Image 1 (tube, rainbow, N blue to C red):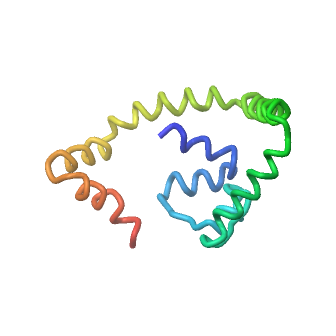
Image 2 (image 1 turned 180 degrees about the vertical axis):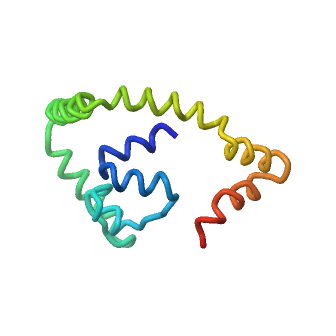
Image 3 (image 1 turned 90 degrees about the vertical axis):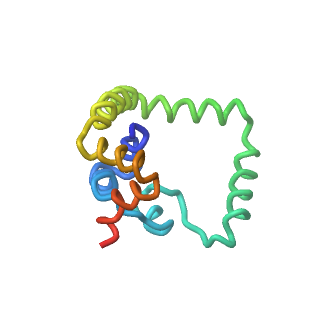
Length: 126
């Protein structure tokens, strides 16, 4: 799907390919290690950590927050974000006609979504 191709910007091409081409799952520690997350905290500390971060951000005026977010987003735009999204949408449409996608849809129609997900995800559990 197109949004997954944006992973390139946060984790780099090697990890983006690894995750897109294998279906591998990663935990919070690995996400932090590869740059997908700013930090990884125990689940029990998550709410407190998020609240502290949001509180720190709230000490900056909304105009400055907006300006800085805009600048960073424009930087990503200059790196080709819009073009990448367009390419991803086009190829995602084509991929929906791939034999595997058609088979997944057939199984989902005939046997249900649970069976289709098992057909798709089963090989990755080995």
